[in-house]
Length: 245
Ligand code: DGL
Image 1: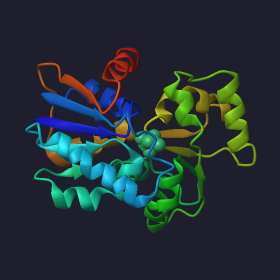
Image 2: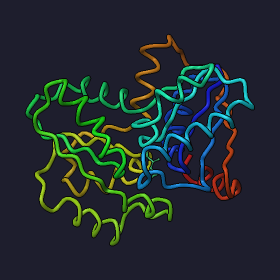
Image 3: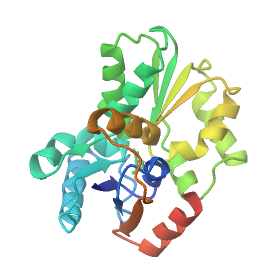
């Protein structure tokens, strides 16, 4: 099976890392819209337009399935993308909610959702968790982490100060939904900040769990091959992939 993975930029490589680790596919075609990242501060219509333009890129490949690793795209553009594509387009929000549900938290346990401005504004995570009966949800837009991760800064003074800025007023959560592709890269820093207590829900692991449950997938004998493309500075993205993967 050949799949596509779409993200606004480099962050979706955190999802690719999980896909490669589980070795469920013959080939992964990655496309990062590095020319126009970040999507998180943009309006709904712009996010949808960019996402539909990304579909045109994937028309060059005979893929069986497309995963939008980007939470912001998953929050806004899935209906439109599915209406225009020949293959299913899956997002990461439903899998993330499913992974949290499988972790058997109590309905009044504190859950923290961190994501871009657009994802938080869409209320997709909050509504899905609310429908499942969760009553102690804090949703924070924490977009400052995105450029830091893009700069290769995963911990240290600036990350610590940013966490203090966002989290000083909240209780230690039982679980954190990493509702942005970039946040798995600061997972260790987040765990340390909250004394190693919260369970972290990671889109990459969540989508693997979701795919295994729905598509009857088993690990391949041959390693999944990966091709990386970008709308700008492909060499830069391939460099990041060499460091992250
Ligand atoms: N990929 C985006 C997401 O997961 C984060 C970066 C951006 O704002 O484009 O929401």
